[in-house]
Image (tube, rainbow, N blue to C red; front, side, top):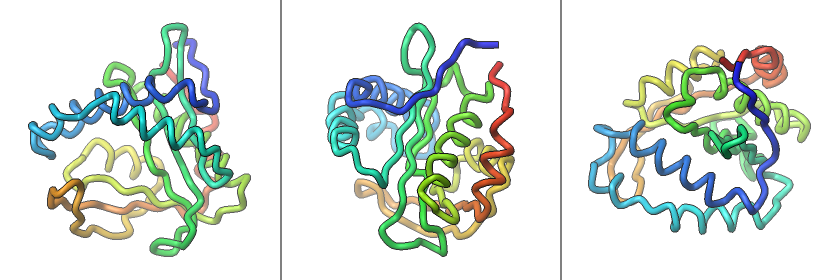
Length: 184
């Protein structure tokens, strides 16, 4: 059992969140996104975006970090959508872990905490978007009861990709299913 704490993110976490995001992208999306793009990712640029997000303190947005004594290991972000997408009124905008902390149950905990925060805002369902070739993420969401809603082409920074949208229509059930997830 690892001694990990999950808490709301603060502006002071922007750089740590950016580091996790860049490190995770560089390992997770290798072979799915051009290597030059991954190599060009900047912690500083990502930190600027996270600083802005966390400084806004929007009641519609929820960001959580998982940390141990050495710092931030992963994060998750969810938001109430201004307009429903495919019948879902909230979105899991991000969930990333340092590669060494993947597949240990920590992602399940972050997913559940984020879903619980959105349930408290009276949302009915949550959608998440994943690059269609990301088999690990797809298996993670399917393993947590998400249903495949749509696969569609999209553009990211000029790259033509395909995304898969997964959704949960019963967030209280997701919260209950992840509440007792063990982190090992």
